[in-house]
Image 1 (tube, rainbow, N blue to C red):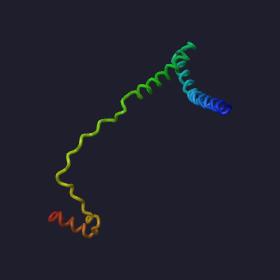
Image 2 (image 1 turned 180 degrees about the horizontal axis):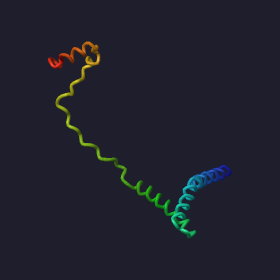
Image 3 (image 1 turned 45 degrees about the vertical axis):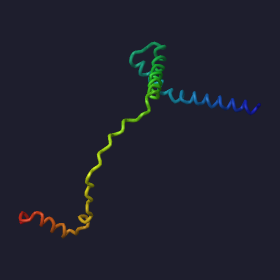
Image 4 (image 1 turned 135 degrees about the horizontal axis):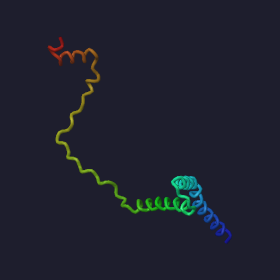
Length: 115
């Protein structure tokens, strides 16, 4: 019996930590929202509390709506038609030519315009 009670207490504490920890992480954001609201001219104490609450309600609503959307990705691209002739392979011989051979090829390609 004692083991079940300690397990219950442990799970309650873990749940409490999971609830309180995000609140402490969000306190700076709440403070910034209150400062921005006050800078914009909201002077009522209740409005200074309502503005951060409405902001987070909006964020949670956006997350909820995003989770309810369909999980299908974008439509797949249409299949491409297969090529009838394969692409010719590049020959690696060009990369292995010496400087003199490349010079001679250039000379042959230009022909009479070389001189």
